[in-house]
Image 1 (cartoon, one colour):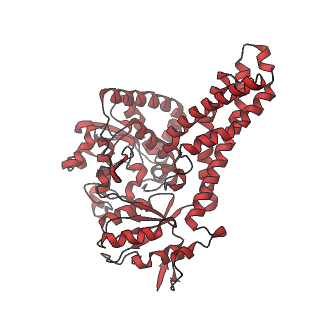
Image 2 (cartoon, rainbow, N blue to C red):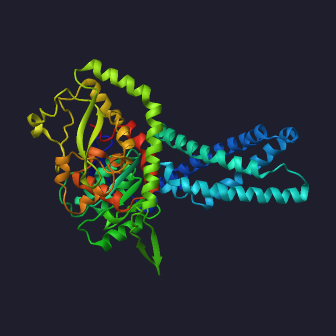
Length: 498
């Protein structure tokens, strides 16, 4: 049997290979997925150790610099360094207990923001462990110059350095090792195509194709379930994502059990539209149940979200004011017309407001829209043309980098928008939304949102509505933080922008 390798565009001969256990031919006899996980863990441990060593060296200096006791500033500083450095393995062990290596090495999304809570908890526990060990040593051997201030300083500095170090290592390994995970999707239905769209939009994924015994069509199909082990070997598959197919579930389960431990396997839940990052899996007598997390849009949560928007937008407008001035001059100098483009959009509860952007099209572009309606590239009531002839040269750059959206900070400051929320639709487009999808109007529209960091224009209109519904139906301040963290990387990659 031969298949087309999507990486190189050439045929690969899948002659009958040995049984799957023989596929563990990597150095040391480990399967490729095991080796990949071990390398990921080693990189994370190295990043954490580096950050903790720096924190252990800097913390005593910070405490000594602010100390009001000259004797304390000079007393046995070298001994403090030695003790703090000796405690680094204690913190690393605490990180391991919290699953910061095991879980991170199994995820597709390597963003550090998902681990921030566990990192903070692990540092607190590690700080208490350090204090206890220091107290024990002091009781036996004498003064070790350990104070609460030094422990708090170490943990506080590490809380900043550990995420930064992890982010740097993940980014560097991705660039140097081309660390995108090769993925195969089981199934060829609508759900499988939707999942494939999300995979293609993800920077850490290289989508290879589909596997299905009864495919709906042959586009992108690499083979059947019997071919899956050989495909994983020939194409270097790192993960199999299981969607819905017409193949009997028992046959699919049997094949996946044979892959267990050799290739990472992920399963899309049947009612995935209701599952969010706040959902949890509960074990009931061996039966896993997935909790559907409710939204937390209480008055207090709304106040916190609005306060954060107001403070953050005020600071951003202050810092970005030179950029606003430079961009305004550039837009005005390269094409006639106003610097800003104002358009009526549908806000919270459908109330219209005037959204502000840097002008990226020629003046009067709205009146010329009817001339290119037949070139619309997106489904639903939305309108988007990838190579829109109305866009100026400067506007094309601003759109590709999403810098044209920055004036919306004024809308956030006024309260018409939020930093994070559903996409603000044009009023005519918003009026065409019906049914469950209208739940999106219960929240203020956002400058960025779940749709923006999940693929933007590479996703269908139905997916856009689903993601907006999901965001509003299960909102949390922590989710807003994750989306804000992912936004800069999404913008820099330019995925789905037009």
